[in-house]
Image (cartoon, chains in turn green, brown):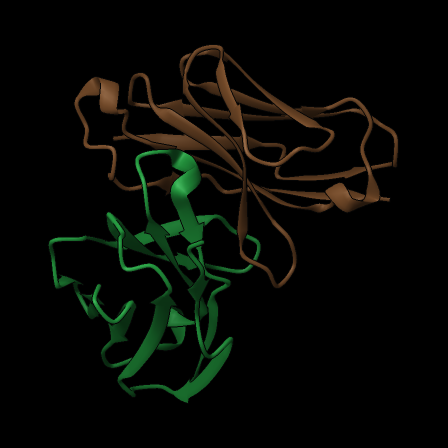
Length: 113
Length: 118
């Protein structure tokens, strides 16, 4: 059974720092991995999607990497800003059925001005 | 561009009352549609998904039901709410494989409905 874990559950860093959020999954047989951002009381915003054949994806200050063999993905945020404060979730797709999308519980990120 | 709407944004209902949450998608045809529930401090739980009109798959046995009366409309319902139904309900869509998109495409989420059952 696929399990997705995000550690730490919460993280607080000063503005301007580069930081890494972690996502690990127990079954390396995935089709893709998607990173989302969720602001308090809001829906999820898609940040990056990495297909199983890819190693990384970049969007602006965000870079997501994928290492299927070790069951890990990282989301790198460069030059963090207070506006980056949010909960970040990762989700892996392990099959063609919609039921095979498994979410982590998220990392709540706080950027201190 | 595609947009997804959910309403209401917030809802407070007494135990035993009925429920109807609505989700609509604009700018795409024959999307895959999903209902998730997010409990406080926990991950997303997939409740239902649909690959077409009238086609509903249930992932969690409970007192909730879903319907898809139109291509871009997805409704979550209950006849009698329980306290445990409280949570944040999210609707999502993804491009349909039937429309030519790969099945492992992105998911896009709506703004959510905060349901409190008292």
